[in-house]
Image (cartoon, chains in turn red, cyan):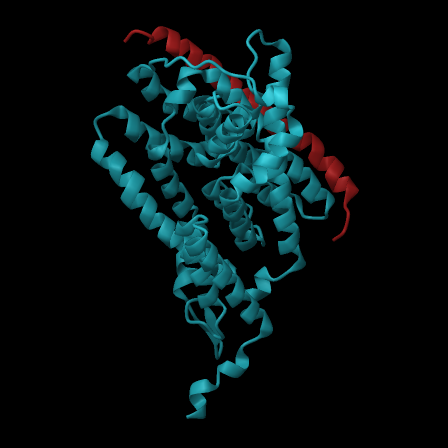
Amino acid sequence: MKINVPLFLHAVPIALRGWLGVILVIMIVVLIMYGLNLIFRDR
Amino acid sequence: MLELFEYVAMVSWRQVVMWMIGGLLIYLAIKKEMEPSLLLPIGFGAIMVNLPLSGAITQIENGVSEIGVLDALFSFGIETELFPLLLFIGIGAMIDFAPLLANPKLMIFGAAAQFGIFFTLCVAALLGFELKDAASIAIIGAADGPTSIFVANYFRSNYLGAIIIVAYSYMALVPIIQPPVIRFCTTKKERMIHMSYTDVEVSKATRILFPIVITIVSGLVAPKSVALVGFLMFGNLLRECGVLNSLSETAQKVLANLITLLLGLTVAARMQAELFLTGETLLILALGLFAFVFDTVGGIMIAKLYNLFAREKINPMIGAAGISAFPMSARVVHKIGQQEDHGNHLLMHAIGVNVSGQLASVIAGGLILKLFG
């Protein structure tokens, strides 16, 4: 095992983008689904 | 007569260890019923590939390569990503997204619980794994076998065999891993929070549009995720469209069973002693556990954050159900809720978050392909 601090520092911002990306995609879907639920509520 | 036993002398101690590991996987599958549909074929396959000059895997004899059936299946089914994707059709047809569609905000907790994947990725990079291997190891935290196979294979990870064994083993161990983490991260008062449940009818149009919307949105953000998300959602569309019931049933039962059977055996092709018995395998075992723990922590913490701003508080334990291990994780949350207070019924909420975890883990896999591919 060889500790690689530079690779870790390189990975952190990309990983953060990944996690926030998942939350962002899901939030967009949540908004669309609320909209669809409203439109198709009684059909 | 002695020539019958000439290969016995070729057995190495490493191969014997692999037989024992194969035997252990078979024992866990049969005796403990831990993911038996996968651990049993994987365990048996591990024994097959670790026999001297095994005909199940490719051997080079006198400079001539004799293709083994497991390697052929690996090239055909896993290197092309065909098996995990076909399995996704079956899984998509099995998932009922209705509890989620009735309360879409639950999806946020599924997304938040993917924290463990990205945190583990950083830790694996710190421990010296190459970024692509780190990403492949971290996806164990998706608690989703086909996604782990897809991502690890996409990155041509050297640790594919270990990653898959660890992913499926921990999925089966969710009822043991999650409770202490949930208890550590929540107070008794929080665990006793009741949540009201109203049965909201979800229209057929919404159910049909959901898989299409998910595919378009995730495909626009991460084009590499289209196959991963698209096959899952296609399976779900078969289920929800209402006119292809026989196809939906075939996908859920025949297709999923057949692929699972082949997948287990095929994965074993990468469990040859020299590839599997390394120090890295132990590290992957530890990192997989790390990913599961921090998925649980991430889901709970976002649920707590939500409570800071919400008028109607939610039980933060449901955030822990945001992993893909369905329905084990939801059951764990419900059981802990009941242990604290018999009248506390969290199952339907936890199921909603659990289903969102299934979805979010696939999207996380797609984003990892985009960011590190």
